[in-house]
Image (cartoon, rainbow, N blue to C red; front, side, top):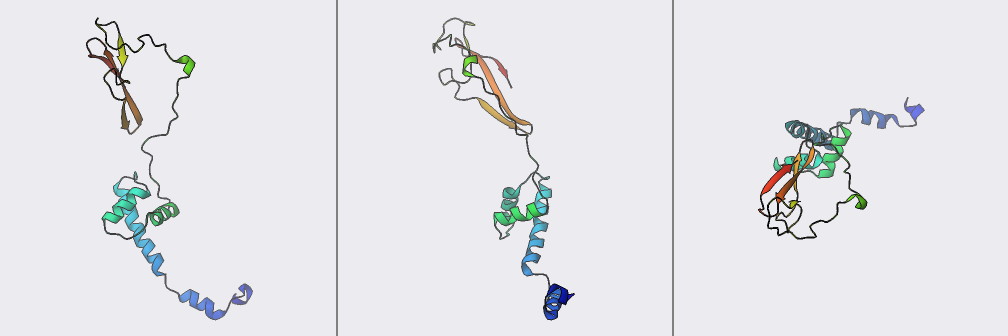
Length: 153
């Protein structure tokens, strides 16, 4: 066989007797710890978080090495929420500006506004992350009394 492959018999014998390398042993030991932390997170953690757990446990390695070992062994993170494309209103579909930025009203229930403007009293929409994706909290308020009259998610 050595003659057919064009190698020396002594080299082949040395290769057969060669012990497993130190690097391979370290990779196997590290892989066991990676699987431990990945299972502990119920499969949610990817390589960045597993790497942080390894460092907190006192392991000395790099994030790229953790990512490579996870990739080679089929260890992947479970996505926490699906990626969805959003739909955006076209400019021609936008509502007209009836209030003309007159947010100070005197009569109750004559003008309502949603909570997306500093002038109305809200600084931003509330974005709430859930396992199924992002929820957006929309608030409607009466401009005269400044009371919340409705909300939706």
